[in-house]
Length: 328
Image 1 (cartoon, rainbow, N blue to C red):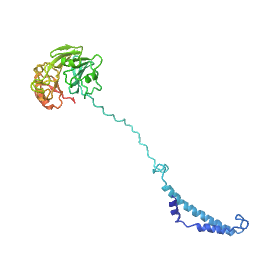
Image 2: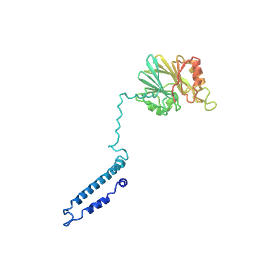
Image 3: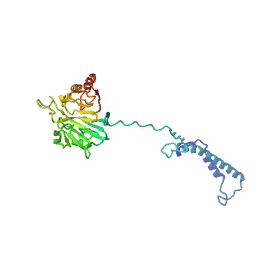
Image 4: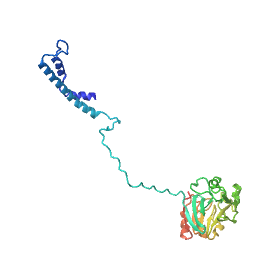
């Protein structure tokens, strides 16, 4: 700021000579520098010179002051100072209501079937795990802990286990849905590993307060890890027909298309497995469904399978309504 003031002052008439002249116009009088003078013209000349000096000094101060005002930074780190900033209008308040957020997608897909005992809700969970709900009761099939999400789902009144393999019998899965009083149902081979409340052999049935259960054989005819050895021996595991009022629900478990399945009658809803090498391919499962003709069929336990190879033959034959749901 001082440098700019100096450059502005050099363009004005010099006044150092006037100051010097003013000093020379008032020689010290006898009696000291403050003694009165008897020369009026000299006094008038001194006053005139003093006025001129004051005028020159005032003119020099104007551009210097302007330079200081222009170049001085504000106290806000370079932003325009409050005295010179243009005020910004506050944004107008909107009278429109806030946009509603989209409803979250449901965690599980659910199908509902009407029965004489009320609505039956069917919820796929993962692979072979599913939930049936009716009249405030929750029935789980093959609950497993890994990859199964039970968030928001009720605790089990009944748990049905089909086989000893880990994707069907899993203690962590049972613990995740179990509560005091949960009824566990399974075949003898399952009971030997995890104690069941009720044990059903192939061909046996039992009436519970809320449903009737029939144990249907599930097994391999030809497929196995070695010649003469199958993945699922006959009599080891149970498929189930669960009856709720006037509706019959069939859950196959791990099986090929054995004669006991082909012979099923009056099945309203069926869950049919398919995956190689352990059970059967989709085309074989389709032939099986065409034999017993459930009203509605869900392919399940189908990891890695081409479901079109199952769905098209069944629908072309008008055998059943096929419902494909997210199991993975």
